[in-house]
Length: 349
Ligand code: SAH
Image (cartoon, rainbow, N blue to C red; front, side, top):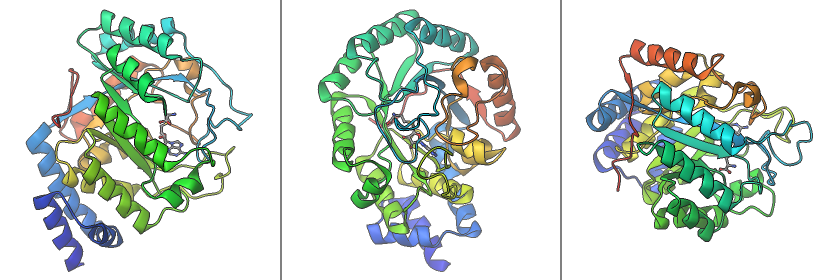
């Protein structure tokens, strides 16, 4: 008990721990340790971002995917998945609606769908930027080549989210088919950073075969890579995947890890994720109270939302975007935070 408090103090001061210390920190997880870490994380978050909560409009552009990640509901072998993709016009319409609601960042996320060629994506990015020059465009479209990332950046994309999923090679292999490797994932992350994107990595909490050791490696990786953003949320099984009988990740551990990541990187953009909100009704508020500072409500057309099922019962908020924004503002206000209308860039260079 004493030990973990000491490690939290050390992390708060130096923003760095040895790998074995991160492991101790995770092993030392308890409600008391979590409370202690959250207090420090919130204080740090506040000194950088005050009580501001940044919002991102999430547009799920396609659930076609060539990959077969064992955890994911839109994996290629899931023949029960009802596939869709949005047209450029539909995406632009989502942005327009989002803009009117006060969103200044649009996140285009999807499976690895070859239909979205570099040229088509560049066209979409340029049109979003032309219509909304004061907005940031974030992409989350999986692994592509250096040249492809470069084209997307040159077309105006600002940020890229690519969770590393786990920083342990063996663990990575147990979550993915053989053709997907940690090395290739890491190379993509490095390329994105080199090109100039604001980059986000991240992982699921409680993914099958995760251990305190692999989690410690995730934390050390985050410390060393120093991403601008980091997405973490509990693993939730999907009924039509090989992991259908695996238990969900733990909400309290996720909250603890959010606090720890804030202590590692005071200026990081840290979303309180949909998966957290899915497992617990007030999960996203709890995430903010643990040190997160970003929420990403869904702006996808209502007709397709249920089809982007990464996991069982994935939350897709109220009946329409406008309603969901109001609800979110109310929820954030109720815990003493305010949703702001600007791009919400990262302070990390
Ligand atoms: N194809 C893109 C986007 C993937 S979806 C890419 O490869 O980056 C975004 C994230 O959802 C994934 O990175 C993964 O960490 C998370 N996810 C997928 N399946 C999940 C599940 N069953 N439970 C919780 N999170 C999941």
